[in-house]
Length: 210
Ligand code: SF4
Image 1 (cartoon, rainbow, N blue to C red):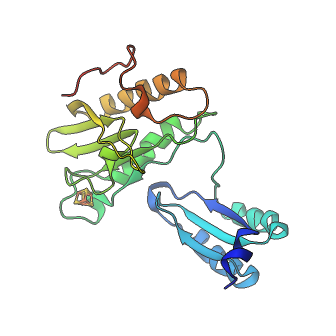
Image 2: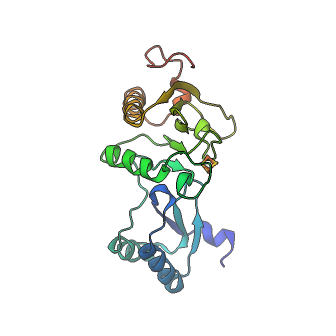
């Protein structure tokens, strides 16, 4: 593998993996391309697949071969993929199918453009909150009586637990609240801004923790 200094001069490419699922066609293609172009592969902290150490001249061909097997790439303005835990598909504590809900969220919102950077969503399949939903701009936590929703959480050097804004809502209501929060964030944000900074805005629709 190249030195860190050499790697810094090279490019990278991030393949979006909704729900952290890695389709076999993409897996095979990445394997084949890696053998040919010799780049590194990293599973990112938000469940995407980053190809790093790529020569600039190889980016175009690599991208088009991956696109041909259905890969989509990270890019500015795209609606964020929810970060999810595995949920009921493979966890005994899972109350909901987190991948299914992630798909529903993306189906509803992925057509949006110019989504501000740094905006994140997370879903946890039970109150153990393995996907850090309380530390995310919008976090959904499944409980036995519906979804609790948190707003304004963040990680990083000054982490904050989000404000629990509703408790025990059903899925359709949860989707409506996500839409309300996304619209609010969009309206109040010029470039990039974590939801945490908007919690005390006089127009924030959920002023009180519940
Ligand atoms: S949050 Fe709950 S359902 Fe999700 S992985 Fe953790 S224990 Fe399992």
